[in-house]
Structure formats: structure tokens, C-alpha cells
Image: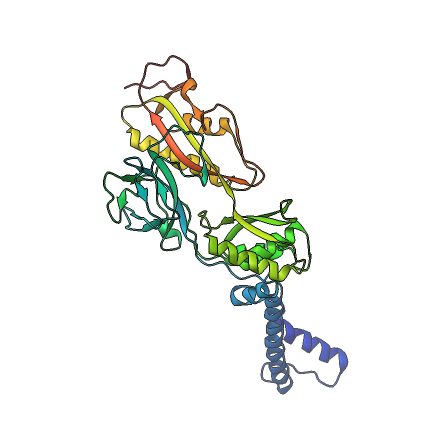
Length: 379
């Protein structure tokens, strides 16, 4: 883009080249004044054209201009999202924890509500858990009432029941997931550029894109052939990492069916959740509390698993082991007690399953012999 000064120099050069009768271009000259006005007019025009060009291309558009481009692809800017958390309820067997049970943060006062009803002692079937003997402690997903990054909670920040239930306690042993602010220009731009055209009818990517067009809160979608009804089954992950209700799934199914034009039966389901539970015994530096170590390890493992939050993820046993031995305050870790989902190997999610950190159990007792890591610490 040229400035008015550059345009003026070009105009003077062009005029001189075209005639030998005009010889004075001083600042007080009439000809220079005319050319000066023309230069500024052309500069403004050039600027307008430059800005218009920036607005019409996805690589340079910003704000509402980028939103307009997104709508041409059937996309909209994602707004603030809710967060979700795994709650651990403890209490007398057969106690019912109703759907919509409210728990509160003891720091911010943020509220979360349970996605479904559970009965203590039955174990929550929506989350695949490796520890089946834990009969009186049950887990359930709860979603934040509000949205945005401010609703996120850390380890053990949700111990308060909105309405007390006799003999029942609740806590979250792992941090929340989700809870993000509105999509930035760069995030929306990337999504537009990676968007697969809806006109690509009948492909797996087509059904996945159509589902996300139906419901903006879908974080991931994976379509597959359904041999039971010769249709399409779409597995969904919500951007808050909670689950969709039955009516919400039905609404997505209807939208996809109405717009697919293939007349194939459409079934939408929540992706299966693979619970990841970590337990071990260790020794610690007495100057650092077990609560501090617990919180640090839980946050680090949650961040690691969050980075793998997708279908068919592999949770590496060694990676979690490294997280623990690198945690300040951990002086000894007993290998024979260190388990991920009750085993000492990688955890593999199926093609339609996503991992979710659900439980951390640590014990700073002693007496075991096999030590794989020991730090030289002076107490």
C-alpha cells in the first residue's frame, strides 16, 4: 500500500515525463496543490481497497468480518463453554443422589449440577471404571451452572452439597475440564480453514461436520457405519466434557437426518468414557504436606490426559509414572503399588472411547521394599 507522499512523487514524475511546459512544482505552486489533493484522494482509495481485501479473505479478516465468512461455511463463532467435573459421592448404600444435585465450590461459590441420578452401591454405568469392588463410593459427571474460564475448579474444591443428604459426602479428586472463554479470531480462522465442505455428501467427515453444525457445543464427533440398522452412528463429545441428554441427542439426530438427504437412519450417542484411576504408595519429604503433593499430581495427570482427550487415545503408564516421580516432595515411590486402572501397562481407549481422569489414590505409608525412585533428602 502506498502513502499519499509516495503517490505525490509518482504523480510529479509522471507529469514531468509527459510535458515540458510545467516546470515549477514548489509547495506554493498551483500544480503541486492539485497533485497534492489527487494524491490524498488516491491514498484514501488505496487504503479502502486494501482494507476491503483484508476483510474478504479468511487469512486476514477479523472480528465481525471473520464471523461473516464463517456463516458462509455454515459455522458460527463458539461462545463461552461450561465446565464439567467428576464427583465422588460417599454414603450409605442404596442412597439415591438425584439428577441435578447441586455442589458448590468452597472458594468461588461456583455451582455444579449432576448430569444423572445414581444410587450409591450400584456404580455409575456411564463411566467405565476398573475398580468394581468400590461399592459404596460412586462417581458421576457434574456440569457447571455458569460458563467461561472462571467456573473451573481445582482438586477438592467441591465439598459442599447445595442441599444436604443424610450421611452423604462429596468431593472432586481431580480438576474440572472445559470452561473456556469465547473463541478467538485465530481459533475461528483455523476452524474455517480446516472445515470440510458440507457438500461432500455421504462421507464420514460429512456426517461429523453436519452434527457439529446442528449443535455448536460439540467438541468432537466421530461417525461410523451402524450394521444394526444399516444407518450411521455418531459418537459425540461435548465441549464441557459432560454428556448430552436424551432430548439433546434426538434433536441432533433429526437435524442430521433432515439435511443428509440419504435417508439413512441416524443415531447419536455420547462417546463412551474410559475412567483413568491412579493409585500408589510412596514416602514424602515431611516439609511438604500430602495434600500439596496430591493436588500437584492430580493437576499434572489431568493436564496430561486432557492433551489426549480424543477417540482411541493411549494413556502411557510410563508418562504418568514420570509425572509422579518428578513431583516435588515425593522421595520414594513403591513400584509394586503403582497402578493405572489396576494394572501396570498402558491404557488403550477403543475407537469410540475417550479417556477421563476420574480418581487418584495415594498413601504415604511405609513398609514396602521395592523402591524404583528415591531422592536423597535430609530431614
